[in-house]
Image 1 (cartoon, rainbow, N blue to C red):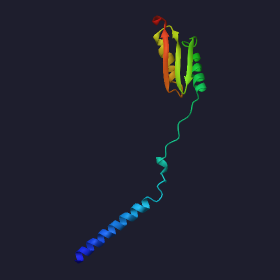
Image 2: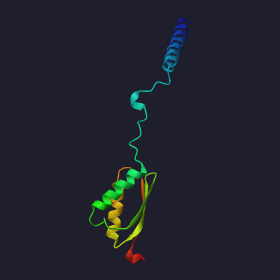
Image 3: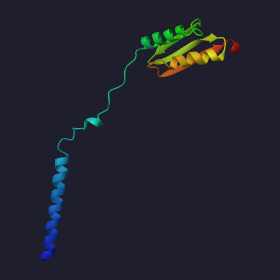
Image 4: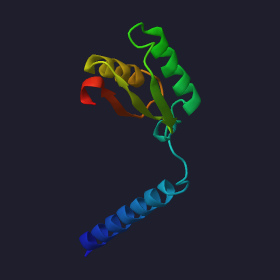
Amino acid sequence: MKFQNKVRTAIYLCVSIFSLIAITGCGDSERVHESWVTPAEGPHYDDNSILNNLKSRLSADPNLKDLVLNIDVKNGEITIIGTVDNPTLVDQVVMQAWLVDGVKKVDNQIRTKGDL
């Protein structure tokens, strides 16, 4: 009987300690360690700065500066329409578009003169 009382007392003690730990652990559930906070979003690039940067890149390249292209930017997505002499020029224009900071997508609608 004394053994049963000791076991019962030990069980009550364990349950009490566990309950105390559980209650104090839930005290301020809104606290979050600073390393768990969602980081701030990266830099924001507006469409005009993306467009101007791409035009600047194209005009600085001697192979691309004289191309007649229609370039549109919406929400970081660039659409390029036009006709060029060869596929190499298409690749160069698309590469320059992807090198502009803030570009999320490039919709290449450039045709080569051989496709016409």
